[in-house]
Image 1 (cartoon, rainbow, N blue to C red):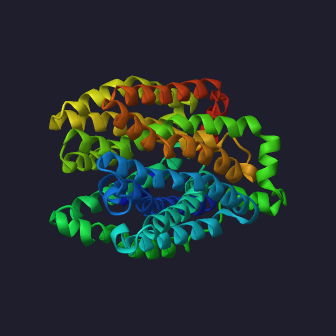
Image 2: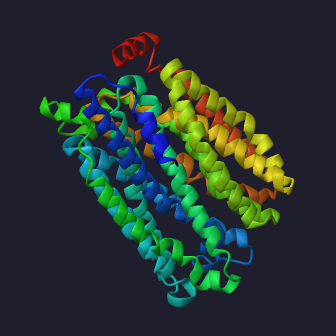
Image 3: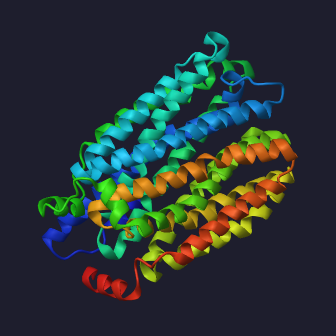
Length: 451
């Protein structure tokens, strides 16, 4: 991620002092949100990587088939997702009542504490059943924090950005999450350079314990950002809701359901591409370094794709771009597993680039502005927390475990490819029923005002 490119992107010619101050505010909001996303999702993604590589052996030693322990470890992964709607509701309520900034400080502190404690946990062979129980409890705490982080981060950017550039700027938030994934995967790649015994005994703990320094940096950075401009206006006008969670379900049920549908398939597919791919690679006997290296490269390349797509949505609207990504998810399902199944290095890399860089890059770039604009400001945090995080449970949280279960039962990727295609089809249908939040008339007006 190039800071100079970010500063350049945010420094468009402005003509008045108050606009200069506004540009400074937007720049600070983007940088703060992106760094927070990097640190937050580094922690959250660590579990998915560790679940595929070590947790099945160290915390869930079930049966003789290694896939069985991996399924159990992914069960803990799913439990973290089940906690996300609860975190989304709590953080959404607090964010819509008291502001975005305080909630974002809380989420990063909670996530960091849980992650460091994971790295210090004794294993099953050391303390027995208490080990997986404590691990799952800490995963629940991670889920509570993650439930409020994503929504707060995109709102911090979206609600400070000029209307004509909300798509382009809001796309920086998932780009930060992608970079957090890259850091977590890279940390495990470095740890795997140790001997097998050293990696299993202590090497896997280093990425978890190292997050302590990152979280302190995140807290320091977030202290410098102010409240989002749009929420500050709502607060000044005394238009905030006293019970936003209830009000958003009563006043905006269709919008919350639309957020759920737009996120469901994308979330499920993303965790098949991220977490399940590592387990599938081990099943096929593919070197872990190939999968982890391919994931790292593909997620890095997803960042420029997402930023470009966010910019395109400002020009042509949100809905057609998101629909393109949903169709791509359907089309990529079979080629993805065919390429991975070949066992050839360049085909494995091509599969991950096709899935993560292209397909998810389109969806992640278009999603932040699209779903944010579906909801009114005073209920937005709660609406996103409910719709997006419930879909994260049923889509992203279950997909690695379902995919691994299908693989263990059929010993074939065909059922998993059909499952992935179904997730894409659900996203296509949801997008067709969603309303366009950035129609042509609004784009013309916003561009005239911005210029």
